[in-house]
Image 1 (tube, rainbow over the protein chains, first blue to last red):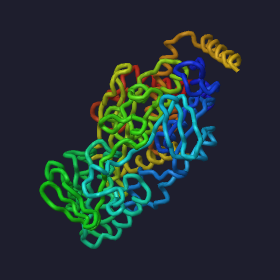
Image 2: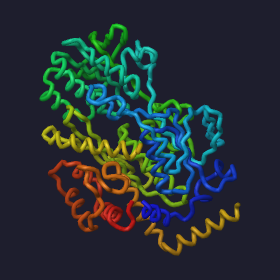
Image 3: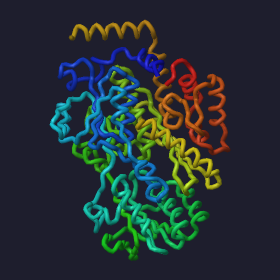
Image 4: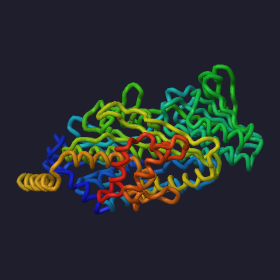
Length: 422
Length: 106
C-alpha cells in the first residue's frame, strides 16, 4: 500500500492550487481541495476509498442519509429463503473514518452548483471543489398504471433492498400449493438487467423443493433479456414447465394493474397471481434530477474520460444514476466506474492529462442455489476523449461448468462486498 | 499561508521534474494505471486475488505477458479471461504486465 502511494504521488506535481480549483475550497481560504461524495452505496464508497488511496492528503467527505446500507446484490438469495436478511446490511462509516474520510449522515436539502455549496438537512453548509454524486435509482411510479408508491408493499418490487425484500420473501413463503408467483419486469435500462431472471430462478429452486406444482410467470416489457440463453437453458433443464416468460411481443404492454386482486391486464389477457411483484420503470435518484443532471432519458449523461456531468461542471456522476455508454447498472459496474472516476479526479487535481479509461463489467447470476452463469463486457472510449463504446459482451455457454461458476461467484461476490464495505 | 502553499507547490514541482524528466514516462504510467483499474474488481485492489480468482502479483513480467497473450490469441475458448483479453492489444498487455509485476504496482 505504501509503495503504491509513493509511486502514484511521485507523478503528481502538485495536489493543490493547480487544475480546476476555482471557487469551493480556495474561496474558503483553505489550501487543499475538498471532494464531497453524496451516496454511500457501491459507487460512492469505492470512489472515496480509491481517491484516498491515490491522494492520502486530500479532504474527502461522504454524505449518506442512512446509517446502514442494505445491499441489493445477494438479496435474491434472501427472497428465495437461501440466506438471512441480516447478511445484506453493512456499515461503511467505521471503515471510512479509519481511513481518514469524513462521514456525515444526513439528507441533502439543496445543491448550489454555482456557489459549489451544499445545504445539509442537519443544518451544516458545506463547500466543495468537486462533487461526486452516487444517488442510485428512483422509481417512475407515474408509469405504472394502477399502483401508487403507497401501495407498492402489496406488490413488492424489492428492487431497493429493505422492507420490500422481507415482504416479498414472506409472501413467497406463503404461496398456497400449486399457486402462482408473477412479476412484471420493466424495459431497459434499469438496475441489474439479469436480476429479475436470477430471482425467478432462485424462487423456482425454492418452490421445486417446497411447492413443486407452483408456477412462475414473468410479464416482460422487453423482447429479449440479459443472459437469456443461459437462463432459458437452465429453466428448461432444472425447472421444466415451471417458469413462463412472456415477452412484450406476445402480450403487448401492460394496460393496468390491480394490487388488491393481484391482477395484471395486458393488451390481450388478464393474469391473476397469488403473489405479484411489480418492478417499476426506473430513473436516476431524485437528487440527480434536482441538480439538473438528468436528461430526457431521466439518467445522467457523463464525460467518457472522467464521469463529469455533461450538463453541470464540477459534478461527477457514478453508479446506477450515470449513463456511461451501455455499461449495465450493476454494483460491479459501479465499483469499476468509481475506480476510473477516482483516478481521473486525482489526475485533474494534479493538473495531469487523463488516460483513456477501460471498464470491465463482469457479472454472475445464480440459476440454482449452487449453480451460476456469467457475462463479461468491456467499455470505454476507443480514442482519447471519444464516446463510450462497447468493446464486446460475452456470456458463458449453456454447456459451461455451472458449479465451477458458482464457486467463482462466491469469491467474486465476497471480494466485491469486502473491498467496498470492510 | 499562501507563501507556505506556494513553497510546497514549488518543491513538489522540482521533485517531479528532477525525478521524471519525460512526460512520456508519466503518460505511460497513467495509461497502465487506468488499464489496471479495470482488473481490480475481480483480482483485488493490489492484484492479490481471492480464492478461485487468481493473484496477478508474484509473476514475472514475461510470464504475465505470456499468459495474457495466450488468452488474447486463443479464439476457441470462452473462459472469463478469454472474453476479456481479446479487447486488449499487445501494448495494453505490456502496460498491464508492468503495472502488476513491476515496482509500480497499480
